[in-house]
Length: 405
Image (cartoon, rainbow, N blue to C red; front, top):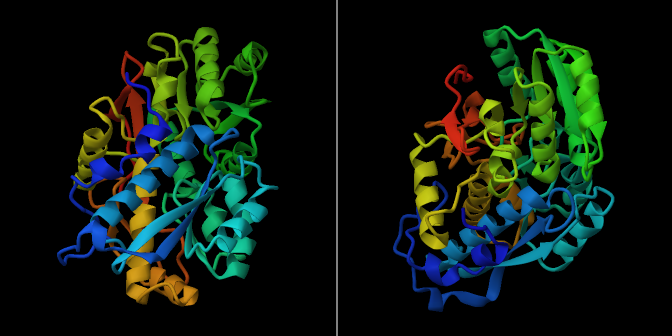
């Protein structure tokens, strides 16, 4: 499998010139040549990308594809004939650093923001974003409170939230007859925030008999796995930001409890570089909360674009699709607002976007927003419980259970 590099994705401008603009947010008129773009009056998108820290494994994927979307937009006429530029910050998945990063992006001239960072950081951004009056989209956030009051007037999320996650997990547990759940989680800020919301919801449908935690840089999880095993769960859930912790957790749990089914958050399925680190066949018994279905034609089209730009070994992730949609939603809002002079008009235009056909989720999944709805998902169809094959690579939707739309 080819290594995915951020440099390789970020420098795609020349290749993207060959790609067609295909998105629910793009216009239908013939685009002027890229050389005719107004570069003296650019549209500026601020990108908070965790290029370091525990969230880097997924944030860099979203950040790279956000840049690709910008390159594609510029290759097809920009936004209202203006070049789109990206300014970048990095809060390192540390919520205490997020406010200053957001303020710097605003000071650098951003007209809208893409927050490719963890849910804990996005929550800390809400008040700053509101005070700045700038529209911000958190494409990979799943913490439902990101899109809810207080301070949500300018903050938007695309993915289904944790309330929907719990409904999907509980449906799967009930369908398969699981009664006792063991949980192994890392202690990152993002996962602590997720666990605080998801675990109580899961406790409504299944007996949680064990909860173990370890630092995200843990080198050995045998003690935690042994304590979980002692409580005799019949199903397991790993909650982590992915990367080495996730693989270590799956390897360890598989060794100590080979007969128990394992579930995971979205991170594992969206980190191709991690799959090869798992012991042979270990991921075959893992079901993760995915958001991709090849039956969605927009997903297939985006995958084709990314493979053409980055090689046939490129593996599309939900983070790619969600970041791509975030940029095109911002494009649509700015165009509907008539430009960037009035940031409030951009927010109001974003609130008017309905029935946007997403690049992720099941076929027919749409995103809609309003002044009272800042979580875009129109249904549970943005979730796709997904499995792995014997080669530790995603095999597509899990055949035993899926949420209904």
